[in-house]
Amino acid sequence: MLAPTTVTSARWRVGSTAGLLLILLLAGALRFWGIGAESLWLDEATSLVVADNPPATIVALTAEDIHPPLYYLLLHLWLIFGRSEAALRSLSAVVGVLSVAALYGMGRELLGERPAALGALLLASAPLHIWYSQEARMYALVTLWAVLASWLMVRALRKGGWWWAGYVLCTAAGMYTHYYMGFVAL
Image (cartoon, rainbow, N blue to C red; front, side, top):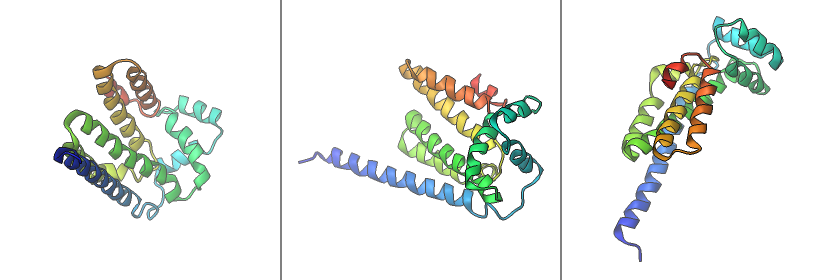
């Protein structure tokens, strides 16, 4: 027979998993709701123009641009889903939902299940994050890299080893997405 604490612990794990799934469903619904309703604005159209080139050309174009190439390279691959407003913006929407999941993971590591769920719920419903998760721009992606790098740094400080490599890779990916990632690395 299971001890009462084991049963309570198992129920809490099931409840927290279901809660996280509900938060992620909410995050997805808010990010995909009306995602193709508005036409592309100038910066989003620029994302398409840059991403609609071969990878070598994308890198060359971004050498003259204020934004690094990683987002455009990922969007180039994402174009297999189409070139409509919704298809272009869906990369950011998916990445926005992943940011919510990553924040939950970091929050759980630092503070426990309930504060992690609250943080994830707040990010899932944050109007500014929803806004940037509905744009064909790099801002949702750099948010994901920032959260992942922060989480991996916490892990690296606690456990050392290969966690440092993950931190360095996410930080580098963030720097190849947006130069402001450098502020997170400090």
